[in-house]
Amino acid sequence: MIQIQLSNITLVLGAKRIFENLNWEIQRGQRIGLVGANGAGKSSLFKLIEGEHSPELGGSITRARLVTTGYLPQQPELDSSLTAFAAALAGNPRVAEVHAELEQIESSLSDPKIYGDGRKLQRALERQHQLIEEYHSLGGDSYPARVRDLLLGLGLAESEFDKPLSVLSGGQKKTGRVGAAVACPPRHIVAR
Ligand SMILES: Nc1ncnc2c1ncn2[C@@H]1O[C@H](COP(=O)(O)OP(=O)(O)OP(=O)(O)O)[C@@H](O)[C@H]1O
Ligand SMILES: [Mg+2]
Image 1 (cartoon, rainbow, N blue to C red):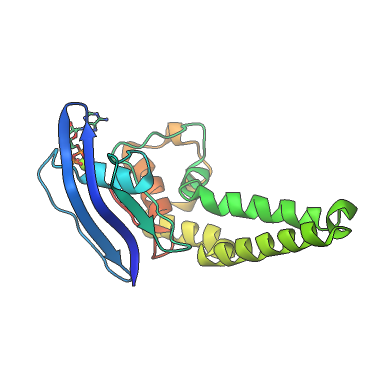
Image 2: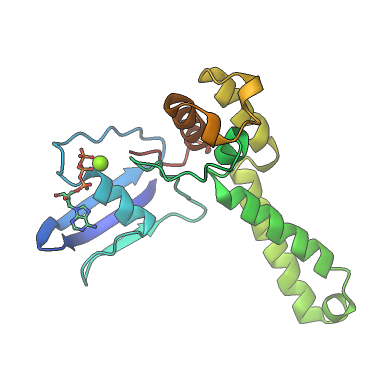
């Protein structure tokens, strides 16, 4: 089953044509190592998938329903006032976004303007159902515990979790970012 498909992609950056009529598909369960010379376009390919770069007219990028992507930048920009644990959790902001929208919908269900209006109530319940599905597919409730285990597994001591990144070493900072990317569920792409 195809998870992500790139069709007829041409990417031009500045004066350089990085890809021309590129076709690629990622199947469910595949693990892919992308190898190429420096400057060949590996990071650009991931930026295309993430929507950071746009293809020329005529190309398209499609993904299966509920497929999300995670991306570990080659040179991560980190907010150094965050603690290591908070930075690692922020590696998958979609979990927090879905959680916040779910809370908002739950509180709206007790609003007479919503529960007193059949159509609005129906819409709210459908959205709630979609969000619950997405939250489960992201590993919602177990996400903080998974991030914690991964940080420990990658060698960051628990005593370092609550320290701001500004006082951690370069290697310890990287551990935080790697932990966040790896903690994404298996369907996520982790790239450099
Ligand atoms: N925003 C940009 N504007 C113009 N040119 C760019 C831009 N981003 C990348 N490039 C150029 O596009 C080409 C591909 O860059 P990219 O970063 O995708 O390479 P890469 O395969 O990831 O290299 P590396 O192995 O060094 O990480 C390079 O020649 C680079 O200079
Ligand atoms: Mg690169």
